[in-house]
Length: 254
Length: 305
Image 1 (cartoon, chains in turn brown, green):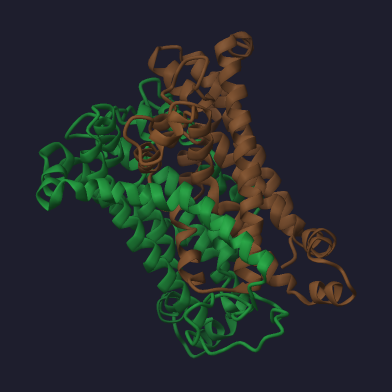
Image 2 (cartoon, helix red, strand yellow):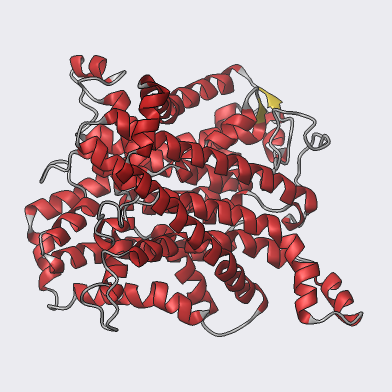
């Protein structure tokens, strides 16, 4: 069992770290001084930040609605919210292209004439990333919301708190760890998105190329050192996310 | 990360140590079609104007981002008619890609069912040093960017392999990549169920003379089956839709190591959106079937618990 995990996960992961530092720090340094590479890393961070903000607001809102309210079609919505998890990233990209491309897209033409380009630019990348990471916050917050129940909220309301006060003073502190847990997962997923971004971004050097696309590009161009160094940075984010999730988890109310 | 959140999403009924603090009495399962099967407060409040507005805004965003684009895929696929759709998915190269994807995903799922259950077993029932590290290792395929996952595997099983195994650009590479990205699903869905399992029945069976294998087969396995099946379904869906980890590892050789997602991408790049949409619709159908199957299995799980 341990050998299986070792051969499948641990050893390969270790080798990437070693390959990244095969020439000492020079590969890492050349990544961090190459303006295109820095641009790609910054773009990835900006896109991930945007996707996390969108998904956190949307996720907390929809979780509250799903848990606290009743409305027709709730069960269908609940199932549909999981859809982005099992859809191929390439299909995600294709779907966004069909609707938002400037030439033939359903909404793309109108947006294009309004001067907004979605596909092959920032908004498209953010949408693709937000799409694939969409269910993560919801799935982290819903169980916590159910556990804490709504007695405290009712008490707050009966004491005269309005909806805003109830949410910020009572609900949010209670589900804080669930939200943070979801945000960490969402961040890791957003930083690492590759397939969907590849389809919608156009992969323009120095403009819409993200860090994951840069790994592929560098590897295929025989810049192995650069590819491993970038991969190492991305893996670092992933491992940091996993470790912080492991630390957060016991603090969750169970 | 999928199965991770998934495991948290559907706690089996027995895993809640205290009953949820819902004020509304719980109606019998399935009595209210609008209710959440696993919800603690099946009724909930009726919508207020403010929350109704919130729901409207959320639904608008969800439609713009997910529902309308996915509908567009199916509409584009149907525009070419049934014969066009059929031609697109039975094109020799495409059919080979779909066969490879589905066959490999099935094989990987079978391995995951065995290994995943065994790993979950070890994590729940045994105590050993380094267990926390093992827990972390299992989650890594969730969080690791898929392109990095491909590179990671390539470094051990590629041309520069330190152990002399080079499977780059072969079919075993596709298998290996699927195995890596789907590793956590069965483990994470079996683990919570296994740790809630009542040991008394096992002890009773053992005291009545049942061997260890009989105890496992007759007592433990039946309660784990829905969880294993749910994990297997997720792992199958993830395998079928995998793309990123294969880019560097499998070489995408047409008819040999090319998977369905790669076929869609090359159709997009050749400006053949109709053909791409046809294959994508097929994959979407698989995703939908899996989601429905998981939903049904989870309800069964909750009832059993």
